Amino acid sequence: MLCRYFAWKIQRRKKPAQNFGNLIKTRTFAEVKLHSTIWKLAFIALVCIIFVCKLQKYYMEYLTLTNSTEIIRIASEDIVFIKGDGNYSDIYLSNGKAENVTYQLHGLMDKLEKFTYCPFHRVGKSLIVNKDYIFKVNPGLQKLILASSNLYDDIHIKASKEALKELKDKLEKEGGEAWERDRKSTRLNSSHGYIS
Image 1 (cartoon, helix red, strand yellow):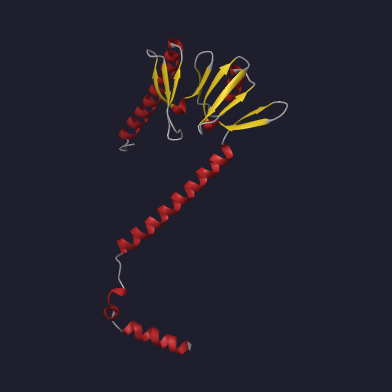
Image 2 (image 1 turned 45 degrees about the vertical axis):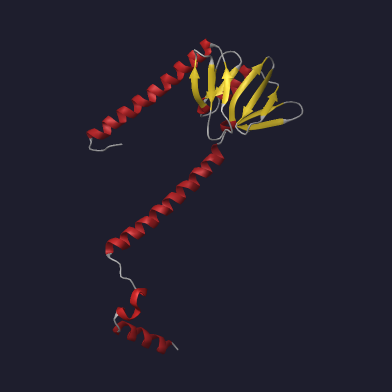
């Protein structure tokens, strides 16, 4: 059996590839190199996706609230805004639900500020907003619009002109600093022949 196999292999080498027609296709070195590079990049992308998913799992921060009867854990990215009313606060989530808790707004803000990434801003006396959901701030119309692909529908909130003006100024300052940082890094990279 083994001898027959080797005899077949030797005969196959002697026969030209044209007998097999289009079953055997020779590839150039560049095609083989490109094919292996594509597979390597696909593998690297898969590893990166898995790594990011694990990071999100381990580094997701939770707002943990306890009272005498229950404990509530809410992922920080799920909090859209918090509305305070005296000793009670309503936490509005990205899934459309609202959770009423017996915490004052300043107590919740203190807990939120301890997160390593804190996208929350205090807007006036009775509102905390997640800046990742802010779509539009219009102090003149006293309107704040929250929108995201995570939200089913846009959320319109009324707030005082002064509070919205302060929020607008904060966001402009943060955006300006990020723009300035990007501009400087582009200028530095382009001086070395790189374009970022």
